[in-house]
Image 1 (cartoon, helix red, strand yellow):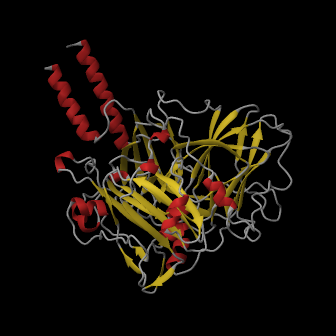
Image 2 (cartoon, one colour):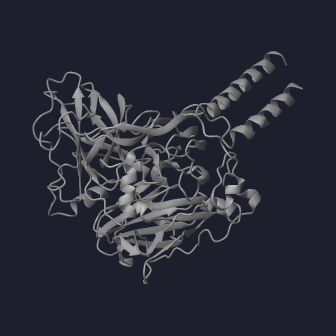
Image 3 (cartoon, rainbow, N blue to C red):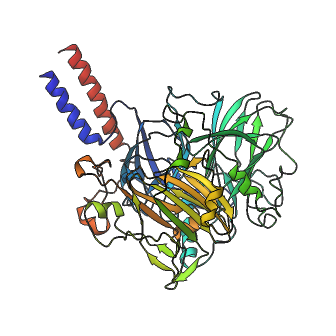
Length: 594
């Protein structure tokens, strides 16, 4: 009788909690996403905070954990959060982009639930719609190795996250209106470090009264420093005065440990360094993030400055900033630096096998896509950005829901493998990926600004980059052994970058530029990966029980009463915790009173 009751309770709990791996821990987060008024560059403006924090709280988890994030949308417009770089296995339902999810309406809450598997490292989350990332709403994600998997360096004495990015004094809604009106956003007003403006290193460029970030450290220690470029469109050069940066990881891959005095970090990219506090602390030290691949003389104000402060520091930082790269006449410097980042093939990853055991250089390529972007063009009277001559137009019905409910005409599976030769057009054309195929993607940047490309659900091998037009002969320059595996890669203006990706993760996955203005104007597509096996053996997780419905399926959505601000946000997580507690107590009772 007791066993039957246990089984009954387990079934009820499983139905409530949704799909998850048995025995793996759960991490619960309860978030209120709301507006807040701050003045990071001395001008009062409306930003997006999470639980009153800007940047938002750090998600610190371990591989195989199940993550439950209950989000209350206290904004006045729809919201989606995406988990940049988190390769949700077989679960694009939780990806948090318009191709896979209906946005959370204002005043509603929605609970994300997914498992982080087979990955480690440094990532971040952010709002993916309505240009909201320009207002904040982002925060760091740390995915730790399980104890059974060794890390290729000694445990650091501390862990520090820095969110860097260009920033405008205008609200995101005003920036959005400028783009809708066909205008370019122009030069940003500055660079924020952890949501704060620059230290007053220059009385002319930096007004008095700006709040700046201070990183406190102890002498003679080693810190892991995770740096994310969460900005809008500007590549930044990151450096710390008088200190070396030992690069050890990027976006889920351990790299060959390499010292850099400075490193270019483009939009959407994440890097992890070991910082040794081995200086004499004669004064505080500058932490600098300055604009790159632009006219740096004109862009001087687009510089973020924080302070590294030893506990035995003898005074404030002063004098000129440490210089960035002196490569005005050498356009290959940054590219050569990017090429120098290699995967550590001798160390373990999230699973107990060497990262380099996946011999990507010997796998036959089954699909090739040459994807070209151009400067923005006018299509049907609107300024748009394109990939292969197509400017993506979001559907009110997510592509995933259209597939599940057999709604025709929402998208087409005919994204061109090469740039179109005709006039550019607006469309909803996506890539038909072959399940378990091996795809080569060449990003050709024929624009005048650097672009960064990201693919949800996957890490890809960055195998080559060069200036000029890509040709078939360019494959002869590919790195086929230790190209770094990551999810976001820069493409320099007038240049190409090639990646290889194994399509083993079923779902519909967003492929986009991380440059927020280009993304907003249509520079994205999706890759549809379907397991052709019989439905009984499908490897994709089912539609979550709490799925939202919109577009052609909006009649299926039950109304959710708008909540008083913050009132409901803890309710669903409280229910989950209560049921788990009841389950544990029930098992204990059965054991005591069989």
